[in-house]
Image (cartoon, rainbow, N blue to C red; front, side, top):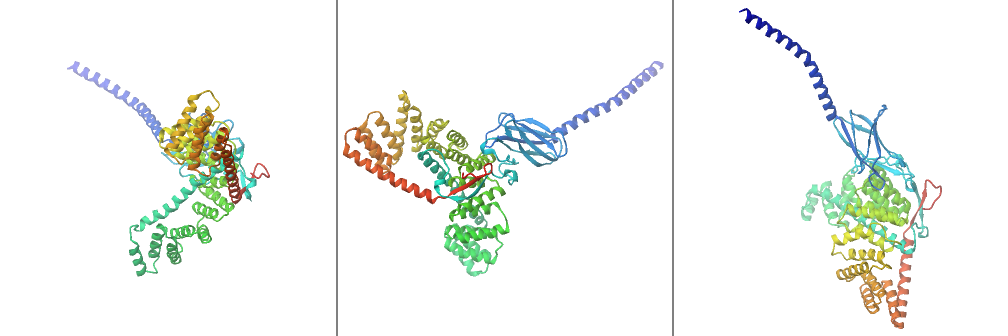
Amino acid sequence: MTNCLATLRLQSSKHRRFVLILLAVIPLIWSSTLAIAQSSFQQHSAISVEGTVRNSLGDPIAGASVLIEEKGRSTPVVTITKADGTFVLLVPHAGVFTVKAQKTGWRDAVRDGLVLSAIEKKQVNLVLETMGVFSAAPPISSQSSPSYPEAMEFKDKPNFTVAGITDWTAAGGHGADTNLRTSEALAKETLVLKSADSEKNSSGTAEARVMSIETKESESKLRAALIESPGSFETNYQLGEFYFRSERYREAIPLLEAAYKINPGSQANTYDLALAYKANGDIARAREQVRKMLAHDDKAEFHHFLGDIEEQSGDPLAAVREYEQAARLDPSEQNYFAWGTELLIHRAVRPAVEVFTKGAGLHPKSARMLAGLGAALYASGSYDEAARRLCDASDLTPADPGPYLFLGKMEKTAPTPLPCVEQKLAKFVRDQPGNALAHYYYAMSLWKRERGSQNPAGLQQAQASLERAVTLDPKLGEAYVQLGILYFEQGNFEQAIGTYNKAIEATPDLEEAHYRLALAYKRIGEQAKAQQEFRLSEQIEKTEAATIERQRRELRQFLVVLKDQPTAPN
């Protein structure tokens, strides 16, 4: 019995010691667990700020320092961009912050007033500008989202002012007349890209609204509804929309006007009435309607629309100012592209480079922005840089022939082979083997590289591409001319003559075809035929020169003052 009691006391004593030890250890375990939990919570609740640092051409910048600091605090969080220009910053708490990207030799990019909320992931894209000639303006403030950029800040004002207009003799551009003609052709192609977008947006806006008002209603039903309720805004608007969507503008206008009188506050009706006026050629009324909308609501899309109207009316100075204002209110891809295109088409080359450069920095995924930048750079004489931007554009939209065609035109007239062009045109041929222009321009790039060399394989490949081009498109006169030149240089004069005649048959007014044919006739002793072709060549050249001069005189040039130079006419 005594032994049992002793054993129980011993066990009780051990139990008490265990309990005491456990009570002592539990706070430590709890404290450690709580610390781990708090650390885990802080890590998971940290605010993530992610983004990319690029240059103004859209290329990523590696090794740039990116820091974020809260207003009023002195300890920033710092990181370095990766090879692809990306970065990630973890901020421990919510607040108002400033993000800054820095790198030696570059202007700082700053994003002020960044509001961060708890447990949030924020996207911030920064653009660094070099200290070069086109970067004299202060740095572009980055946007939190490339798809929905914020309004331009005061420090983003352009480094130029469009002060007026002048005749074509003050045109910008660079190089011989051949290069000038190419730059003018590229500018017109850029304008086509803008025009197609404007038409799509105009019709798309109307169609999107019509979708909500029973688009499948027949004309008879809509007219019956109007007869029943002639004083109704809806019946007038719906029938007016029906005619507008059917491009029956003369019938649409009275109905949209009636709807406007009933309810002048309907922005949709006012907008479509302005569109109908413009489509019907009544520019004065279209301008009046848009100005009414602007008086009520100063929106970027209204300034853009007014810019289209002013350009159509023959007032490019007013147009470029409206496009600039649209880009200030909303630096969207569409607004920047319209602004840059207006500058380029009116030969304000340096400002066009600046605007397209900033536009490409804000919208690095826009192929047409890079195409516009390439066209502007080519006009400025920066041929290699122009080609690189077009090569980048072709990478963004591999199936779009546009960038390749720009490259082909540049390569054909540039004084020396351009970088990356031959490789891109080879890809163009591989991806679109049925495109005659792909084969033609690829042949021209091969020819430029191999002409005068001792590499017959390259010239044979060029010849095969030219032959393929004219097989695909027998009306491609320029390809026949180049093929004839190749035969001529090989000593195949009769074959060259036959090919030149095919070029003239396809394109009778092709001056070079007549000139080359004259040379071939002269070479084989056909002097009379040679003189006849020389005369035709001279006549066509004079006619072309007169046409080009008239077109240039009709297209007024912008008179530009650069802010870093007191007076400079572009």
